[in-house]
Amino acid sequence: MSRRTRTAAVLLSSAALLGSGVPAQAHGGDRGDRGQHAGKRHGKGDRGFARAARELGVSKEQLKTAVKAASEQQKAAGELPSYKAVVASKLGVTEDQLKTAFEQAKQSADSRDAFKAAFASALGKDVATVETAFKDAKTELKQQWQARYDAWVASVAQQLGKSPEEVKAAFESKRGHHKGHHKGDRGFALH
Image 1 (cartoon, helix red, strand yellow):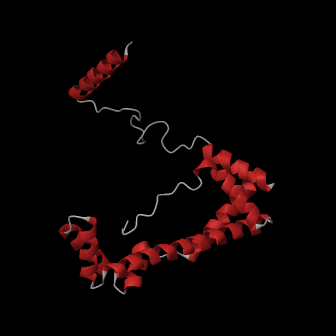
Image 2 (cartoon, one colour):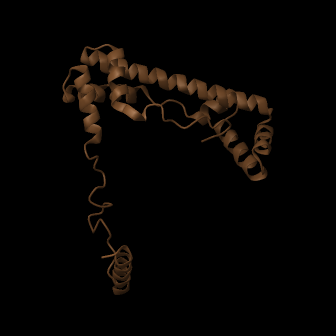
Image 3 (cartoon, one colour):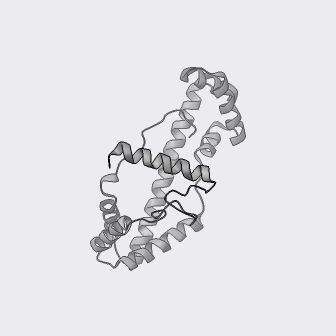
């Protein structure tokens, strides 16, 4: 059957189903999920976990237990502040004031430079001060996330009787080709 014929058949059968009052159930039926593959990881994450465990000389279960315990410790330590909260703090304003200024500037500006000027003005600041606050907030949060990651690695390492460097190396190799693929600096943004 040609591609064109298959497409026509699918369209006609869909039209027939819709016209008959029977709800169309494509790739999921009435199971309430989005198809037979929904929520399944296909083992890819497990292979990376097994590889990291092998590199550390521990079982996959030992590694999972250590990771789970370290993650629970992180959760108990609480959330890091949001980017908006840190920017607001650096500017000496509340998050609500920051949000209001952002919305005002977004509606009144027609270019990036006009937005920056309107945003800074709505906060009673100059553009350079606002840009510095964004940059400093980003740096501060990066440092906090790195400290949190280092503490998590140290916790996993301690539970496995390994050094933090060994654990980091095993997880770095687990991440493989994904390492370093992060979005670039967005500069002056509240995303």
